[in-house]
Image (tube, rainbow, N blue to C red; front, side):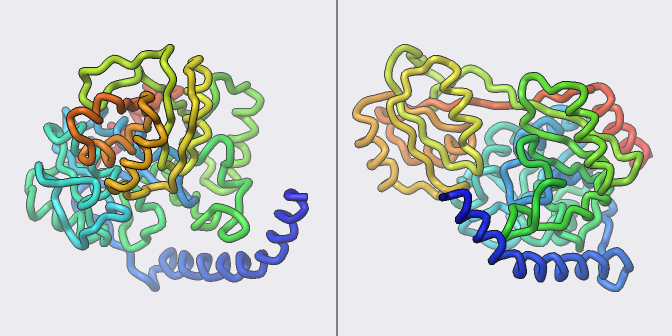
Length: 349
């Protein structure tokens, strides 16, 4: 019954999707023909983006680039700072919070403040210009989620697509989850299929590459990445997670199912799961409710949720909270790294 209703709803919504597709197509055509202007910054810019509404793993891929590049090039990360309480150009400092700059930029700042500048600005063109004005020796800007922002033309576009829902099988909202048309993939310099399972057959890999190349240029390389979950950490890094003790899982991410599946595979005693919308802004009320629901149990969250919840906890409460750090592993790592480095060094030289 639910499947039938879903199909009927898609049929009803299809005319709106068709209209939006036409609007997006015309907008892109105006930029492609130069009738609307895109500007390419004077500093090298790498964009990590997608065609859909989220959940493709941009954050760990941005962090991968930071680890690869920040020791060799003076680097800044520029993000919109989704759902932050502030507006305009803002440089993260020791007064920043997830509330003021957004959860993902706050995660970048907590992990890499000694390596990179973390900046938020809705206007990516103004943001890059502001970075260069504040940090004249800056050599590289990593753009977090700017694929659909046509006013800026990055030097290197990395397009992410979820293995379980590749863009070539999806549709524009509201029928599907895309916010940009499939044909926009032709702007990508690299496509990465993210969140791959542990084993992907060579046949599936070749089929996916063939489907992707319908929308990209023939020479656009395609890579595959997996999420690697690290050991469960205490919020204060002092407490040790007791694997045999009961726990509650709390998430506020786009696709929590993969995280739940991982935890279930670890033979944990999960007695309750609580899910909030992606980028949910936790308040003290939610913390109190979570603590009441946990009934003394350990509470596990994602790394992104940790940066929002940690400031709300007192010294006693924080001992009950744990998170799972993640990173990505890439197939053909050396080839990908070389491709990125060659583009940067060619530009700088």
